[in-house]
Image 1 (tube, rainbow, N blue to C red):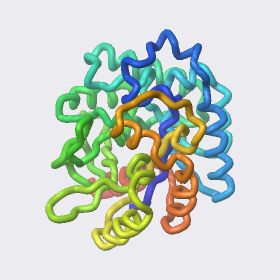
Image 2: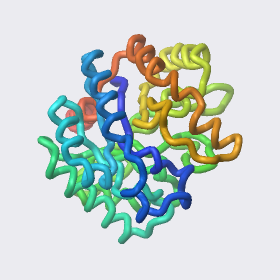
Image 3: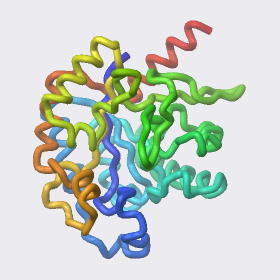
Image 4: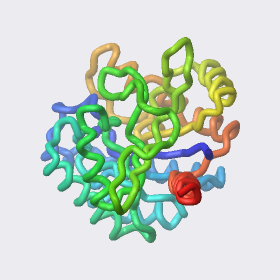
Length: 284
């Protein structure tokens, strides 16, 4: 199974840690940094000759359609990150359907290929929000990458499968889940490769976990956000833990991406999806 490189395209003020700090009515008045940072990512990928998946927030796509078109022209996959970055746990089914439908209408109008991928804001596909899966399938999504098989204070399904699997299906189609990367150590799933984890772990620890992942034949899914490569991102008052989680090692993160894409071969979700879907079809 190929390793996958992905980016969640959102503004610096969208992360869950700022929920309640900035009203959506204020967003247009705040400094925007998503275009410049995403263009830095595109330049990085071009230099490395890499294809990635961009899970783009509908609000960003609506405000900066040229950015979506630029990503698409560069040969990367366009996928959905919802519209407003509300965690699904705060939405009811009707609200969620409106969110995903609005997002897909915008993204499909800007992408040269149908948008079939989704990642929930803050990985908020949990046991409490499995009702969202039929809605995703009905709205045209064919794979999801929102389940984190770990214990966490905001998200996670600790006992979820750790390899790609069909998480929901109806008579017409299947919805594949690509769970976020973990390694199994002493009976626990330890996260690996994600934005915060790649940024916060010492490089030596990440290197060790990569070695363990290879031994366990694990697929690696790396994700990152535009604000994570931006040491000049606006600073907001947070508690000590919040500041560490959110701001630590921003100045080193692009170097971390450079390093991990040197030691691991990556592609996009659409390539991995084609492989699992073809394999499933051949079995049937």
